[in-house]
Image 1 (cartoon, rainbow, N blue to C red):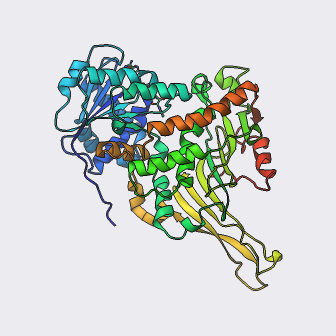
Image 2: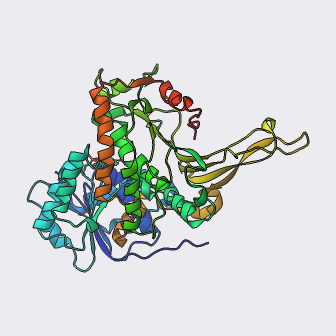
Image 3: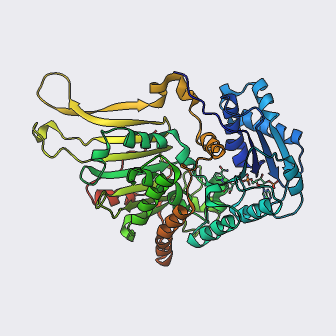
Length: 484
Ligand code: NAP
């Protein structure tokens, strides 16, 4: 099987913050991989921009090192890297200043796709949008890409949206959530809407509950002070976990097109019920013999910011009434894993008798590690001795199913940047979606702040606070084990 390369138009991509961590770790190594896959038009160029004084040669040296450090080892071929670097240019620009903008304008070509990636702090989004417009660098066809965090509450998200909308139409704005660029997340839609098997069962009548887990083993480390201003709800739930929840819960869109998909996601967010505080568990990791506690990492012995959160969400609509969606995410947990598990109800009656055992079907969609899907089905335990039932997985890990092609699956950033160039907004969040997500999140955060809620301590590298386990236990359910 040969992978299909969809051609893209010629482009000039400007990366504001081109010398920063995200650009060096993800964006430029991702573009390099697309270059190696033959997906970059012959004359396409990438222009880094930041305040630091640097020429093209300095920028190319910086990015050569970044590719060697962050691209997969077997991708690093000196000749290819050299050819890719020839596409790179650099302009010194301060988002808040006047210098450098004319140089950028002179460098940009007409008649190609112009895209501007804002890989800088959100406080600079408005300045960049304004200057791109004032200096007539962007036109009506240009695209801008903005990074998370998109606000810290509804008011700030609205202000960011207004700052961008003053100069760009919504159809030009690409709000990135890299979870949506993951192969498995798109495969989730393929499985739901490309097969007849699942959709008839995808509702409250047949699904007992759904678990969405994004567990990390790392703590907040050196980013403690920064992280302490947000916490797991703002950093992970409001964006990544809610996006996953939307894709799982939404109605079938009429087409796989930007507004069809985003309209359906928005309806899910608007149908989310408020959560009472018994269904929210927040935690902070404790110290180990050798490592600091969350509060020490955050530099605030009285911090009330959560490094872990678990929530029980309900969606008020015909499809999902009464079906819990349990969400959890946290740092310094037992294993690094992201997965969605759709736990189906038991068969209504066992013809084999209760002694044979009863097992629910579970469809697990793994985002990392080992992207893939597993469907747990019940079969007879082989051998004599009567009818005893056991679970076996029907496993479809991409590495096994696709062989060598799995190595060529683009990373989320690669795919999303190429979607920007193609002008496809399907996997990007629309402004009203982001605002609706904050409108749901804000009262929950305000609620625990008003209650002076203190997060529960949990052992580092455990499954999280005991209260989170109890939250499910009270309903006769249990979290899936956090394991790689
Ligand atoms: P970073 O390492 O601090 O880099 C910031 C970049 O912006 C640098 O290139 C910096 O270069 C440039 N910059 C700062 N002020 C500027 C100004 N006034 N005008 C022009 N350029 C300016 O930050 P980062 O980690 O790359 O993050 C960039 C954005 O992506 C942030 O919004 C962050 O929240 C988001 N993000 C990052 C990650 C990640 O993994 N790093 C993940 C998700 C989202 P100079 O100082 O030379 O100007």
